[in-house]
Image (tube, rainbow over all chains, first blue to last red; front, side, top):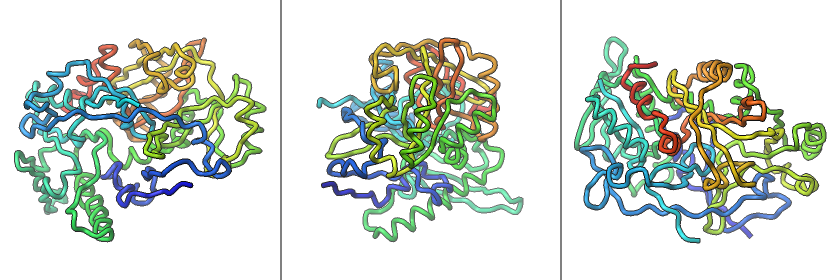
Length: 108
Length: 322
């Protein structure tokens, strides 16, 4: 059995300035308890694979420098150099991308 | 003149861009749409000359609308409203913010957008991308869009490129049972083609397999093109490189002239100033267009190859290149 819950603000969560998306709901986020029946599950989801959930370490934002900072107020682009590595799903409409940010993968 | 950046608070590539613009002495006003209306104040009045004038302000800084030279629209998040609003009030507030706040920004004259949100939204349609790419002279794999199992079988039977793949049109990440799942591009073998349940559940995209030796992400910043070859060394990443990042290697390469010509025509046709385009590269070094993303990531490619994408973005937004 699966229960799907649409977010009340899902449509507005992406591309918030686009007038086009007032007319076309392209990116509606939802969660479910599990997959539905094979007979009705969209073919494109049949082989979906579980991936690690990203975890973001504590951080803040400096409104003066206009960059993210660590808990000591130091810019993360200085303290974390090029070693930051994550696979986020912020790449528009494409699923996880490797990118440099401040997320880490959680243990399964 | 000021560069307006609309991005999330925690976004490493944007931090690098802010640092570069600041180093150049370029004024930056960074905010996220989630700051509106509670932390970001819009005061815009239509002048007799038909221009919107006024300001955007936070507790810490302010920018006059007339000073905004360019806008970097980098995946900002939803407007955030007071907790006490009902669902009806919240929906109304979202519409008003989108059309009012967004409308004022869209009406600013002489501003370079990367990208204008409405152009980016139009360009999300993969069938439009494929048709536009083909019309601009780029090679595009045979593609089928259907909810018919018979059409899928027909398409697969006549495919002469080594099979077919299925890929999503839009976000391929879902949350089920508390877990994040990704529907990667999938090579359909005989077993998969024998069980096509769910094809009729919605629109499905199939493409002819490109017998590729590597892939490329081509990042476009105004007139600048950065082509990064991505070579996969595992079975999963050869089908979809996102499936196994540890098996990838990267190389910044020259953009073939015919590809550059087609890509520039593509960007012009869709009204985009920034995009990340994905290609397959076959054994004859021919580029096959897969898709483009108006908000595509580039930070990890820049770090892996040294391609100066942040500098090009700063140039574009500063106004040195259009």
